[in-house]
Amino acid sequence: MTATVETPVQDRTQVYVGGEWLPSEGARTIDVLNPATEQVIARVAEGTAADVEKAVAAARAAFPTWSALTPAERADHLQRVHEALTARTDEIGQLISEDMGMPAAFAKMIQVGLPSFNFGHYAELARTFAFEQEVGNSLVVREPVGVVGCITPWNYPLHQVALKVAAALAAGCTVVLKPSEIAPLSAYALADVFSEVGLPAGVFNLVSGFGQEVGEALVAHPEVDMISFTGSTRAGKRIAEVAAGQVKRVALELGGKSANVILDDADLDKAVADGVGKCYLNSGQTCSALTRMLVPREKLEQAEQIAAATAALFAVGDPNDPSVLLGPLVSAAQLERVRGYIATGLAEGARLVTGGAEPVRDTGYFVAPTVFSDVTTDMTIAQEEIFGPVLVIMPYDDEEDAVRIANDSVYGLGGGVWSGDPERALRVARRLRTGQVEVNGGAFNPAAPFGGYKQSGIGREGGTYGLEEFLETKAIQR
Image 1 (cartoon, rainbow, N blue to C red):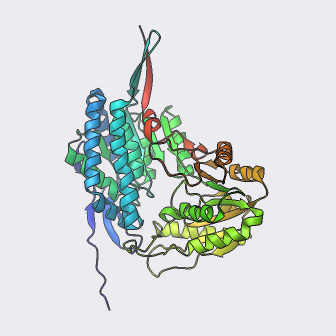
Image 2: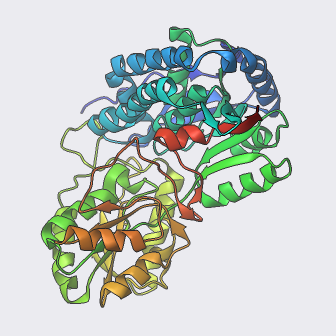
Image 3: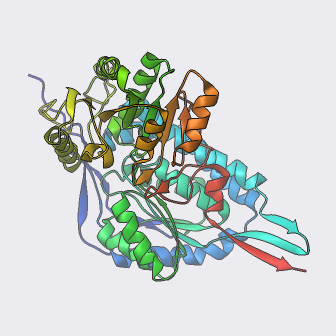
């Protein structure tokens, strides 16, 4: 019998304020669990409103000097962060895998690769962006909005931080970050990197904790000029409500229920197999996951067979096993949520093709790759974000019906269109009310704008569009 090896518990029970690791004003801590083993791997501070007060004061004090640097000088700092993250890819990727469950190989490539890219990309943009422009007798200048509060999720815990923080710093803003308390460890690693590369004190600050305390205090603080949030639509609505009291700018990247429209002239084998993978990435814990697969009614049975065969290839298990494609869900609460949606789908008449809610392993928050078919737009699993490896296949009658079903959602974040005719696919893509559409499996572009229509949010992240979110516009007439 093999003895269980206990993982040392990291002590990260401080907040990062004014360039220093300081004790939290609160006495409580939060346990961080490895979702594959259910073991406590770290403890972080349960921050307080008093911690937020100190962090905002530090960010406000640092703002005049940081914003007065030339964009090229700010770019130099971002470039050093890019280089440090790249050098620590294996270490931070493993940390994220243990923190939130993505298989380690994917975590290194995606969960660290994308943040590293973004710091380098925003360094480049800071050097090339037109912060000033002549318009007639006016000098139009783009200036940093000020102190930014960033509130980030657990599913891409470093990527979502980097999208906000790199862009905000490139713009000349200073930042107070509240990472997710469920998977906070990569944010702590980033704070270490900022310290190592010599980012000026107070430009970046981190306060861990719960949304009800730290998040509310950050959003309501009168010295915070903007909130950038990624998370649930419910929480986004609360943030918008609180921020409205001060007419405070918000950028909200919220939920999704993205449709993947497979037209009747598409390569069905390729389209369905690719669509299953786009649904199951990160165990389905991706806001833009293609969770609704729309197929011609006459090809429904064939699509089910392809989807089931593809799902069977998604081995579930230890994130450190190179053969594993599906790690655990992030928490016990998320596991119960996904199981609840599977039960609801069955109760409402959807047909289970493969998978289900039965336990996959004795330990860890694992769920089997699941496919439902004969799903209609009035079903809960067709309308609500499940955030697990659950694909719903929905038949349609013709192209018009497919577009109608695709747009029948309160969300509009991602989408896909497959067709043997690229021009036809592009024509349908233009009709989808959503912020991103991939045509025939088009690759994700981290420099393109990312964000949603409808209740998927307000604003855009990524590239030049993401930089502009953190800028004010001033006209100086001469």
